[in-house]
Length: 152
Image (cartoon, rainbow, N blue to C red; front, side, top):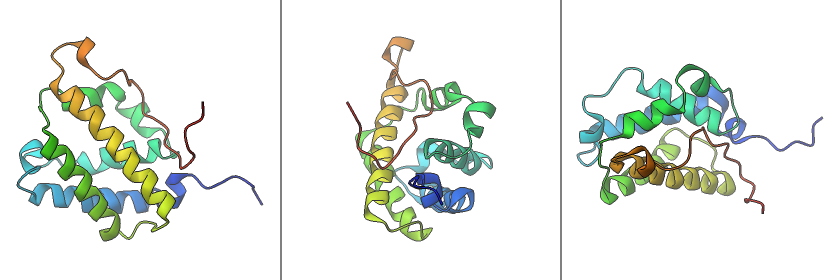
């Protein structure tokens, strides 16, 4: 028996739990008049990419970095010019998707997920307005997110 705390990936239900979450979220985005313009008609591979990113960030397999690379994430957000309203709506729909997908209701887990989404949407918003490489957020790799408070 291990004294190791479960990763967020494990608490989310692994790949299947995260895929359910990202599918519920993505379905809601494509129906939402505020966010749909950012996503267009949708892309078949988007849920898979979202799942890969979240899985890696939550301590699961590093498929996103190996198969797509973080630069892919930067590039898909460039030029979108994400508004504050769109960023907030993204966070709201993600919170709703947690319930719809029946992902862990542990309060510490939910708080960590929403902190992850708040951080990620801030990075995406900054990158969406970047005119030059210097304007981009300095993050260049998938962040490992945990429920532990930051140290230091």
